[in-house]
Length: 310
Image (tube, rainbow, N blue to C red; front, side, top):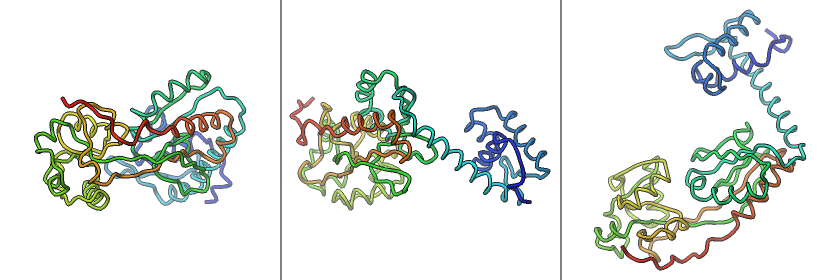
């Protein structure tokens, strides 16, 4: 069938596209913010309008029929075109009022962005801000966010990025835990410590050994979590060692650098990224420049302040 000659409702086409991408009506309904029966009716109506079956049931999910697979490519291109129109329209607005979505890693969203957003709200009260704190990178091309704060440079040609700064992170532990550990002064002594690990754990262990200079194994990981905020709380409670940004660890009483001057710090950049077309918007340009200025402010010091022992 030549799908280009078929005229159908875009809402139904979008319902089909998201259902195909999510793999079930329930997941697609959540993604679109509608009820499952409503979504099901839209897909059924599209099938009736086209006179073909688009999905077959497979357990609790759905799989595309040959006709559905053929249609999917066409509808996906329609979705990309619709996104392009939206991006162009958003990029041309000259108002600094409206909504903007900023994405950052979980720990940055919790500890770095709040004072910046408070200042931004004072300077531009007409801008409504949505913050997406996640360690999974949002897709700016699909408008999952307008501006991203990332530790890597994007490679997509549609995106533009500005390197703002470089930060350091290193092993931190509570003073109490270091006392229990005997206050190690060599890498060899730290190799027997308890660690709080990230996922995937094998990659985390490899990074510790390769970049910090340790010789630990997965058996050292007593707690594993993808959440940096969880790591930070567990470090403060004396559960073990973990890699924490210096700006957090150095400011917390009762938490210390581990083997300062012996173990190598991790250095990571901060990139501010946005879509090339969105960057022509006054609102996005204003927020982008504002974030660039605020994030470029260096930490108060690169040397840990003297903190009283508990």
